[in-house]
Image 1 (cartoon, rainbow, N blue to C red):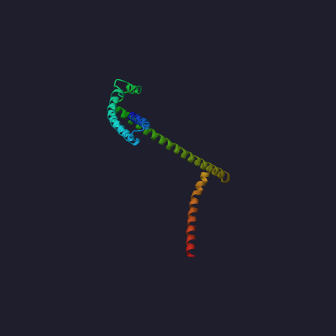
Image 2: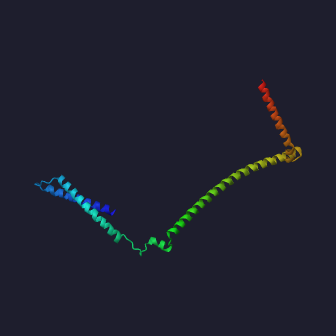
Image 3: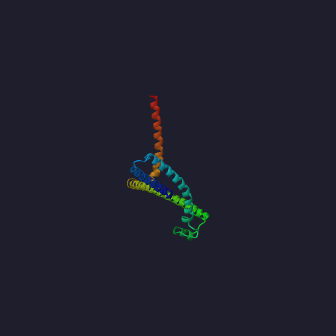
Length: 185
């Protein structure tokens, strides 16, 4: 930034000098120098100054870095007080970074596990609601069985289960015979 600022200032000064020379030249009527010649001469002089400025700026930059921008080791800046209070070696710092990374991974795993548990809890609520519906239906059947047949639902279910199996078998036989008859037609 400093280099660019110096270059900009040098360029502006040369443009100012050139404009002053051109104004003075307009006042002289018998001069053979053209504005184009002055422009070329100004550009040559600017190039000469820039080359010398680059050499000088390299030296000036070294001096600035050594004398002005260099902070002695015994000087403690306000932002360095933390480092003085809590000194860490590179290995200790790396160990802390590794621990932070490990803790972040554990946190992510716990968040993921929490989400999975919440999803499972929602599933269990749905299953619980379905189970309650089945229990209500079962209680209703139990009440109907007591009122009409004077027996419990379990007893009637135990009685009906073998009969239902027989009924299913007969239904299959009828369907098979029906298919055979349709094939013969």
